[in-house]
Length: 307
Image (cartoon, rainbow, N blue to C red; front, side, top):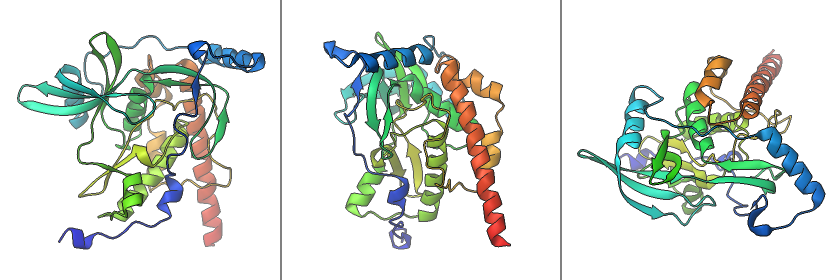
């Protein structure tokens, strides 16, 4: 019966969530003795100095509350009983099996720490002369997601496994990717819910300057059409303008503007301290203001058209 109620999502969703195109195009800065033009290296070095490095963070207790706190506590305290390398992705993560008492679960561990001199990434094909690919960004994305009340990024903590410190994120069991949905022509139980989540995702990606979003890192769980966003290690770039065209709209659901404005600047700084640099946090606050202004402009334009 549940399957009979499912209807296919509109093909327009592919315009919101582009397919993965450019994995592996970026190259680490100064890796393996590779040489680059002196001007490029000078630009990259200057950007690196401006970007800085956050202090090494640690975490001994849950950051979130309620169900998030319970999930974080499991990630922090459970014993790692098995691990395997994942062949997909460019950050080469580990999928680990955890056990705490009678409970078992899986999670994804990343400890990537790279700096890139130049790369063209994401569907927007923006040319970035410098950016970082860091596991800390995964934790920062989760915390910022919760601060503005989205609930799209799975619980993520800082965890040391053996001698490696990185991000440990809840593995979404039973999920299929947006790419699977498109290629296999899968149906969604609640396309309207997916459309709403896609709008929130677009605004969130603008906030964290994530131009690496693609159909592989949008996960869907049925029944209920629950959407989860993963892979944010290349987000949080220093540009203060939004990574969208001026005339491009942000199709956010009702109440998003209020949630975006709710956390004070100091709450955002406190949540992200040690995960991002001051420059990265400052860019987030600037983009938050830019998103609020854009949404207000769109609302005013809509009101004028309705008259």
